[in-house]
Length: 106
Image (tube, rainbow, N blue to C red; front, side, top):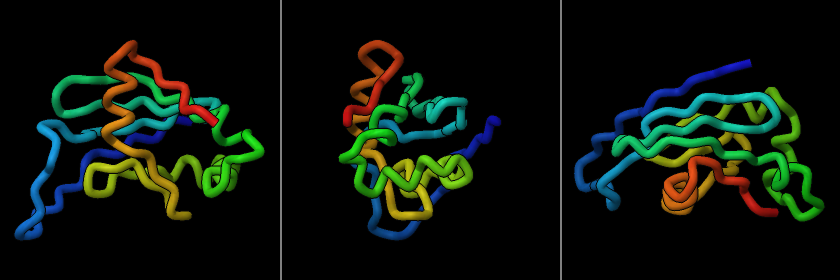
């Protein structure tokens, strides 16, 4: 199943993006992977399978439920899920910028 989310614009006064780029889209791929594109053209795959299946997954453990995993969205430039899980956008950008694929560590 593939689900795509586009950036939600949040133009509240006083809120400015720190980075010169933003996560602009995310598409859910099979096997707990995400295809992510940033506004500066950086794009790649985020593989969350190892993290989600880890005994130390914490808040990410509930993302084993594919219905919940598929509810990823972009909120203020961050990939988030309804259960409160999120991924650091700076780390994500750096890692996919290195080689196009980031296997999120356990």
